[in-house]
Length: 268
Image (tube, rainbow, N blue to C red; front, side):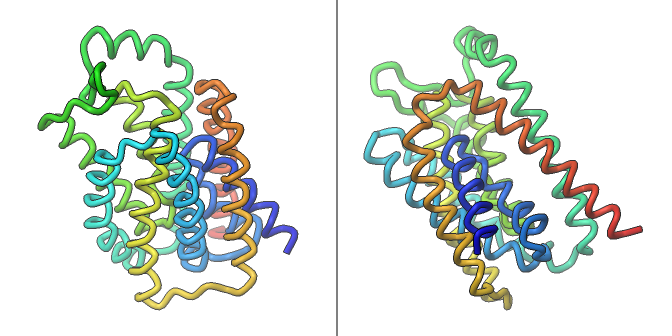
């Protein structure tokens, strides 16, 4: 029980601070609790989805969530999540694990690069304009075909990988919106949590309909994830955005290496 609580709290804290920490739920369940990937996916989705819902309510209350963008990304993600679920039943387990590790390592590098070049990227966005720019008068996105296509693509990929790997999709949403818009980091995190809530709800339903089950002990992990997010969201505004990005990048890189090592050793 203590292990489930500690791991869940850590995942929830990472999710609350970065909006993409849910990607660490599956490694925590596999490395820390010894679950297999098929066992970890539904637990991860429920933990991430319920915790994200809590953060979304807070984000809406503070006016941080760009709800139109969240709905666009969530709709495309929900449409593609069944394809991800299907692929998870077709691809071999070892292939899925290696794919997950490589993807996590890539996201860690992307987040580190963005953290290193945050100021330069902001100046570049102001000079040439990003795909989705905020209106100075309203603080909302300036909607056009390029912005719609960008957010639809980000949401669709998030849903696909949520169905395949049970990762929520924030690890794609946060760096994707960060790269293609001038929305501030705290607004990105809040919007990401809203998208994760909606995508996870649809994806976990599909996963359970395909026969997945939840072990009773896993509910300790789920509850601790919610608690960890609530606490972390209170401290998030006090932490510089680049520090959040660096912290997540380092942690994700370490987890990807450990998980890849365990997978390769199991194949030998």
